[in-house]
Length: 309
Image (cartoon, rainbow, N blue to C red):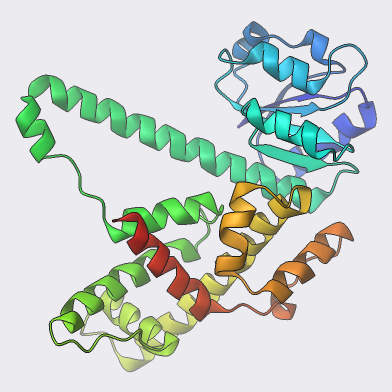
């Protein structure tokens, strides 16, 4: 990804550049000290994907700049400011700003938000590629045949959407979770015929998904090894997702994604604990975080099913 940074504080610009370069998040396309220097043609010329812009600047502030770019910049905007006025944040969101982080700059929060931005851009690109493919097919087929061949929604596509919304797609454990959704859907379909369906234990879910992945000929040792590896991948992925979601709520408790996903997927005590860690710049520790994997899997399955109806 290519970033353009606008902030009247040279120290903040330098810190953001260091974070982006040190963490391998992308390239710096350019920087400016005030919004007065920013226009759509400049961003297009530098092929900017993400604009990081300060809210308050002496000549033209961040909101005025974003308003001037409205409809002419296709990238994402991350607003940065030490001002936490709900009205100003609300105005920024109304202009299409999806992400808002506060000063002083928190390295973990910046990393979390920018990785989430990157995933959203990748998802948009994938959707655009699919749309172009479907448009090409529509020129070759009649409208009836196009409709009959339209891809059906599946539990995996619904789950993919939810994980993407929470910033998990890209984590190794996301594939394991999608495999779990497919297994649970198949199990429910089979058990409903017998009117016996109940959600299996987490241990059984991991075990049966491992068998589905490795095949019936896999040895007990291979299955046990895969189960342990899958459990670790899923725990790490849920841990990273917790950080993503909490970072949104840390900036704005009314952020729609924080409101929609935090309490559903995670325990309140862990949400509060993670907020305090981010506020105090405490290095996050998976070993010291209680990950309720079964709750996450169960809610993910129920929410994915809801999206299909």
